[in-house]
Amino acid sequence: NAGVTQTPKFQVLKTGQSMTLQCAQDMNHEYMSWYRQDPGMGLRLIHYSVGAGITDQGEVPNGYNVSRSTTEDFPLRLLSAAPSQTSVYFCASRMASLYNEQFFGPGTRLTVL
Amino acid sequence: AQSVTQPDIHITVSEGASLELRCNYSYGATPYLFWYVQSPGQGLQLLLKYFSGDTLVQGIKGFEAEFKRSQSSFNLRKPSVHWSDAAEYFCAVAYSLNYGGSQGNLIFGKGTKLSVKP
Image (cartoon, rainbow over all chains, first blue to last red; front, side, top):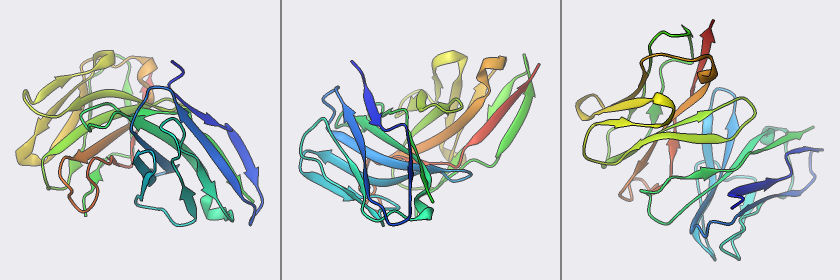
């Protein structure tokens, strides 16, 4: 199993550009989530999904969109990037029950100029 | 709102010394408690978790943590630190009930960076 994979590893955008951060898992996990990590802030939840077709907002959803058309994939879209979205983004997944460990991807480092 | 507090931003210990990293959470429904470790440039790895039962839990890499409900704490300990333990450590909480709309989602502390002196 590859676990949780994220692409790209690094990305530089200009203000106003759009892009999609990709996340995939091959563990058949129902729950997937996106976090952003900023220095001194820990990880903050952006959006999450409890299954295909079901998504919800986390703590910091503004400026981001998600969809979940398959169990495996959970892309994060930035429609109009802003410098405040410069961060490291982590995708994670787990089985439905919250008793289960959440597995994290390696992260995407995004810089918005 | 629910919150997780890690009071120490940065801790330096000598190799071979004992370690305790502090974590406090805001009171709410029954918490599920986790400690994760992040090495530089890497993702997060689960060290240990507590759901119920024995309040002292053992994890990987020789770490343990003790849940104290009366103090709303879940401190991480290791009796003898190795240079390879240098990393950032995150405490996280999930609530089993729909407490403020965050059922099952992890709430992270801001992290404690551990440096190890030779």
